Length: 125
Image: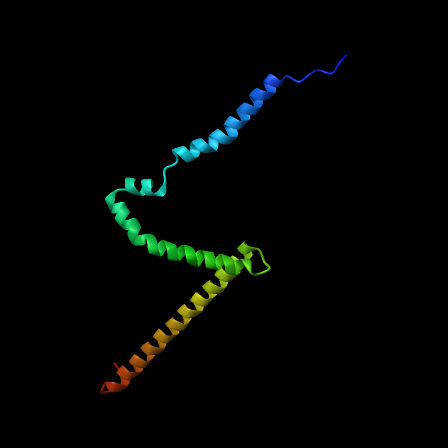
């Protein structure tokens, strides 16, 4: 029995359908998706004003985040481990700062109490 010849018509249909899906799908998404300017123009005026006010802060936050990621990527550890280590050291630093501040406040209170007691005639309250 001779080998079966391929059906070029079916192959052509399959290629055409694949091209429509692979090229037409993304083209449709690009055509339907609005641009940033169109989205911004559809905002409520109050939202537009708030968005413009917060733009610089959001940009600074993103820049800080990107710089931290670059810093984390320089270590040999995975980024999530480097971030956890940095977060731990930051948290420990904040806790130490709070302890130092509370000690200073306690010392000031003691000074004020001792100064108040010694300044009162009779020696005690």
